[in-house]
Length: 86
Image (cartoon, rainbow, N blue to C red; front, top):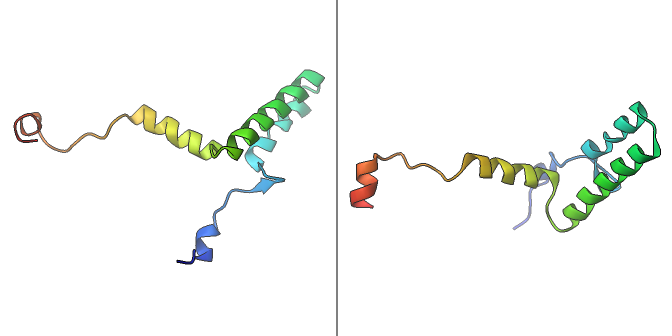
């Protein structure tokens, strides 16, 4: 089955394989221009780049965090029905 080109319409913007959202961390370096800040921004971007190589992008990590915060799905049945009939 061919993938429709319309499904690729909302791909995240990447620059050299790094999400553009993470490149905004360098704005922190422009605010406080020290070598330590530049190193921290670059290390954080490289950390997320390595994670994305293994398949854990920033979007996937956010979705997993939201899933953990929501918990298990709650059934729409009363407690007595779940207790006696399921």
